[in-house]
Amino acid sequence: MKSIINEIYYGNINGQIILPKTMGSDKEQQLYNKLIEKLNKEDIPILDAFLTAVMQQVSLENCKIYKKGFITGFMLAIDIFEEDK
Image 1 (spheres, rainbow, N blue to C red):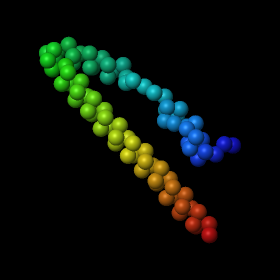
Image 2: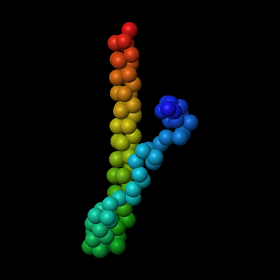
Image 3: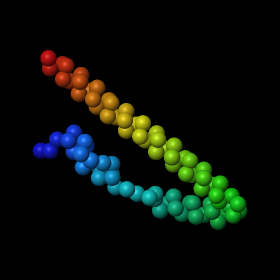
Image 4: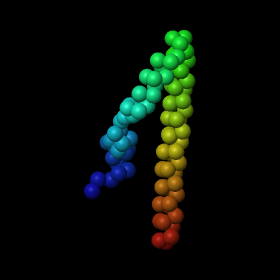
């Protein structure tokens, strides 16, 4: 069995392998298209800028949660290791 630590270190495992990359659901696209139809042409760039800002913030939050998961995992591993002593 390969070491997952080595696989992560050498870049053989990443989020795209674990979770498939998606560009949003059909429902989201349908709602976006309906909203665009109702907006003035001047409002569309504002909506797009807002959605981009929201997606960037969500991405940053996901990164923080991902890191916290690793930290929690290592804390559990240390605790288990020290119990065995």
